[in-house]
Figure (cartoon, rainbow, N blue to C red):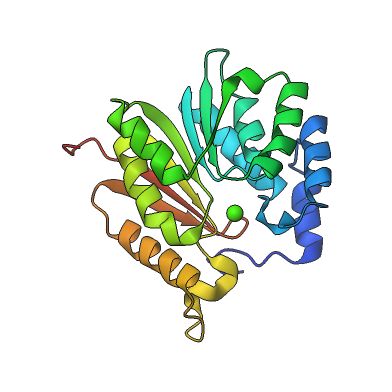
Length: 225
Ligand code: CA
């Protein structure tokens, strides 16, 4: 036994799923369809979707943002646990992959809770800031192009209320963040964000080895912006 996070063997991962995953049938079918789409690796793991839904419930979040929607699995996971008047703004640039999501959102009866914005996410978030929506969101999930992670993080901090939560995906980047031989733009961007968040006094944070690494950051009360 060690006090560090356990290594998930295939058998242990199967056990984890068998003993905790409660994936609605519509989400399972979306996940199966996504597995056939190019870029299927970009889909979050099912236990990660369940974890995000749990966080959203725990916070009683009503106003959410997602940066990077792909085929809509995580947006669906969140939308399904939002209250009737809850909304998630889903930012993505790909009409084709998000069209897959739209079908399942309709089928699950939550399409009216998901506000898909097809445009570069930094533009959408900036428009939201300019429209006076500062400090009005509860929850942001960032899972898009890694080189823009820093702008997504900064804009999210502006849009979040104090006590609001940012969840950033892929912060362990398949292990590349700790591999000195890796020095591509994506890896550098993720390392830079991890280092920034770790010492960022505007937030409280926790980096979890869930999926490909999840950074959780709660916006502190004591700041002017
Ligand atoms: Ca991801």
